[in-house]
Length: 163
Figure 1: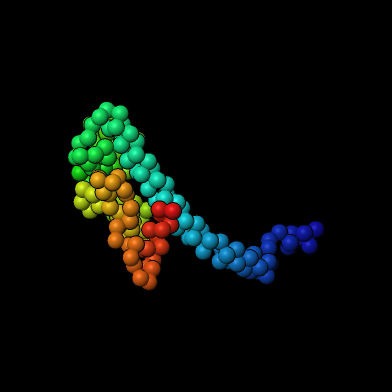
Figure 2: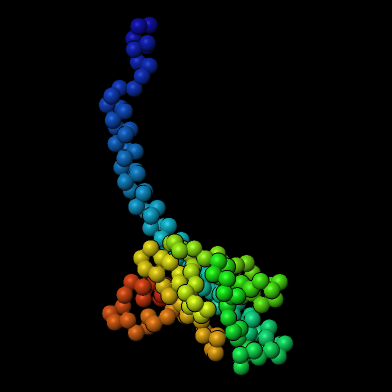
């Protein structure tokens, strides 16, 4: 009976062994989680760029059907109403919005900011990517990065966001 009452707790060696195993597992898992977060932000940006481009084409089609050639062509003259908080959104009752819901500007990783009426920046931890909208052609592309020699990290981020 006395022998059973002494064996109710773990020994110090068993506790150290468990702590070492937990430490090894966390050393392997934590770096992988950080990479997953960066990949998720990149995929978020890529899907938003695709949605913006699709919205531009939708507005062109809508203007074409209406016969509205504001600015000399069928592409929208602007992507939002210069309210720097809501991007790719007009406060006109959803008749000319590029996106179904606005993207809210925020100067942090994984978010957009507006530089001026045709320039936007997607913020990535590894380098901010500038975009420019050209109303004459309807293009929404990375700005001034195509001629970078040698290719910079921002250039690579541009390729990752647009391909």
